Each structure stands twice: as C-alpha cells, then as structure tokens.
Length: 158
Picture 1 (cartoon, rainbow, N blue to C red):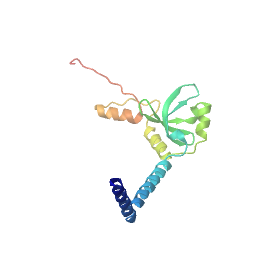
Picture 2 (cartoon, rainbow, N blue to C red):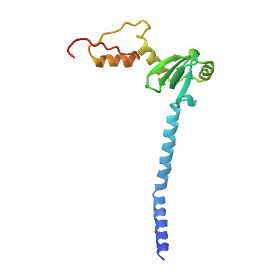
Picture 3 (cartoon, rainbow, N blue to C red):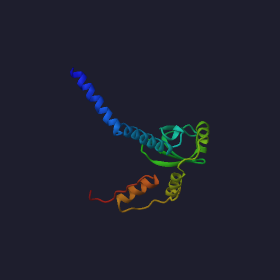
Picture 4 (cartoon, rainbow, N blue to C red):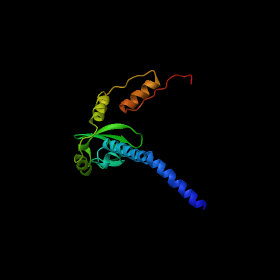
C-alpha cells in the first residue's frame, strides 16, 4: 500500500514538472553544452598535432619534446615541455618525416608567430651584453629573449 502511494506521488510530480516544462530546460542545457564544445573545438584545427605534446627531430637527429602552438608557411611556434619557453623553428631544419608531416597541415594562429617574430627581432647572434642594475629587469629581458643571465659579483664585503 505504501509503495503504491509513493508511486502515485512520483507520477504526479513528473506530470507537474512536464506541465511546467522542467524537462525541456534540461535539454536546453545539453544544447548549450554542445554549442560550447563546438566553439572550443573550432578554436583549434582538427589536426591533433596542435592538441598533444610531440617530439620533433632535426636533420642532425636531435630531438625536442614540445607542443606545437602555431604554423605559418615553413615557420612553426613551439613551446618546450621542460621549461615552457616559446620560440620559432623553421620546419626546413627538421627531419624529412617531421617536415612532411608539418607541410600537410594548414596554417594556424599566424598572429602568435608574428608576435614571437617581433619579440625576438632584437635578439641577434652577435648581441652585446646589457648591464642592468636591477635583477628584475635582467630576468624580464632573459625571459623575453631566451638568453641566459650572466651575474658578476665583485667586492670584498661579502
């Protein structure tokens, strides 16, 4: 008898919820979730190379554990796994297999490549060292350029 009353009560609650469209709201939430997922997936190209870490090899056999962030022509932007440093690589310097794999991928996030090119344009192979009186300035420049910091300790009152 008690189970019958509970069953009737549940059916009554379901009927009222259906009358007020409660179940329709849940399907709307699913639709919004599907739309959000589609937008997130469209931000990256379908090629999984941009979504997962990869190992690239150069023509001399050296390997780099990284994630490919962007591609424009023969230039790719990568983020090294070990220290999260971002830099540009010419795909022409990669092994033939990696070069062919990247050649088949369409350009993606070319704005990032332009920004990295602009940031690294001041760094040349014959760059002169700059003296900084502040460690914060030196660290900021080292992060921006990817160059090491040289510390010079002098004096006798240590």
